[in-house]
Amino acid sequence: MIESKYSILFLLSALLMIMWGCEKEGSGKKLFSGEANVIGVDPCSSKGYVLFLSESKDTVLTYNLPSDIAQRVDGRANVSLKDGYLFPERQNEFKTRITYRFAAKEEFIYPVCKAIIYTGGIARVKKQIVIDF
Image (tube, rainbow, N blue to C red):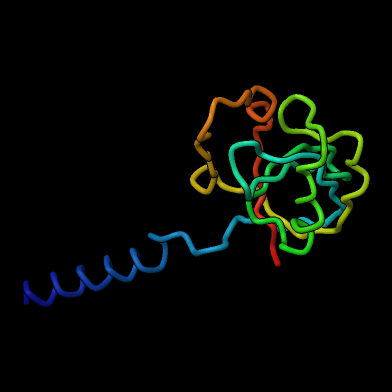
């Protein structure tokens, strides 16, 4: 009798933990869609790009820009960079529509610079996004 009570209590506890104990993947991650301009690069990463989101007027970083857009932007070697990461004279060239979500803090990418590079400008960009393909 006592064993059956403990068994039922254990099963109920396990069921509660399964149902409410873990956050479901993707929950709370609202997707947005809009126009974005690639306005710069992360000088410490070959995959980091600075985007200006037209609707929200936010400046954000992304490390998963679609390869077709990245290839167009990667002509940046011929571009003079302002403030160590921006190319303002060509920022209207790289407009695109994207679907994205804001990255959770645990998803942020913090690349380590392999040289002495001024990163003061890029350090001011506090938001990161993950582009949904």
